[in-house]
Length: 158
Image 1 (cartoon, rainbow, N blue to C red):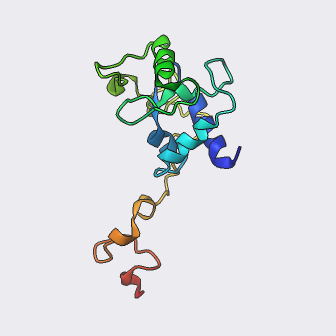
Image 2: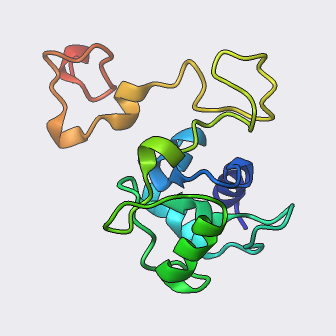
């Protein structure tokens, strides 16, 4: 697998049993905030699915609204739901994960935000990550109001 997939797998391995993360959340945690679909592609090729230690628990990754992945590669959405339910995850009447209760906060099990920093990897992109540049859509860029002009920005005389 490539570097992108390996970074995805490293994050997904850290999702504790009984918690879920979204495809977009995993993407943000590896510094690729607009790559939710590619996170899904990487997980579709998961070489070590399962719940045993050392496995990549891709069943713990769901859509942002708590829906199961329709293309869950290892048995379909019903199997994904069974695996999550076995870990104690609860669902609403429409079968979606109760995200406000079961979404992982990105911290290692037992750690809290602002804790001792014992995480074994970054919990998000680096502090100097340029969100404006990453999220800017060229056709929608407004040169007159941007704070960080790009090379092609009219503020730079382009």
